Image (cartoon, rainbow, N blue to C red; front, side, top):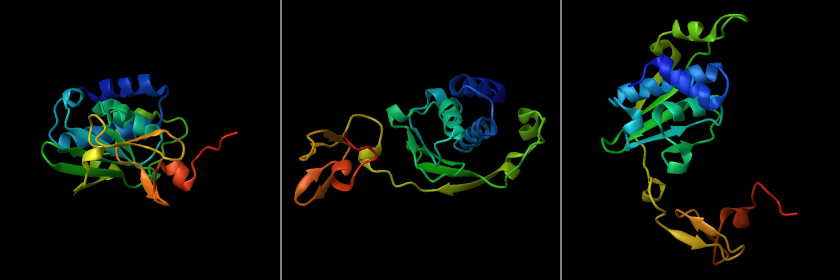
Length: 181
């Protein structure tokens, strides 16, 4: 396992700046890996991580664990929380780690020194959990692919819906985040 400093350096190189989210995310990931007894996260293929916010913390967790969105091992659950669930599919064990009490450093205080004074037990709430993961959510090739009968685009991993007797993508069925011009 890399040291905290090595993990933080890797996270900063990826993310681009030092902030509380990077430090907390690195520490959160390290606690999750320790609890799941994973010595070398970058070589581990049975780890899936669910991050609960699309903020700095997600980048740090992804870098430390080696989990990537495109490899289907990093999942975004947009709950707006500084929390992540670490699932080891081979061991069928999962732990959810959430930031508990909010700590605020002084204006000119060194962030790394400030957060490193706080024990993991004070910084995080940890709980063993279960995660019901569907086969179409696992890493690997798409299990089910359908063509949307409205727009003609491919919908992977059983993400299509049936509406008005047609197989459709969610944006055609319910409206998307974009509008065609």
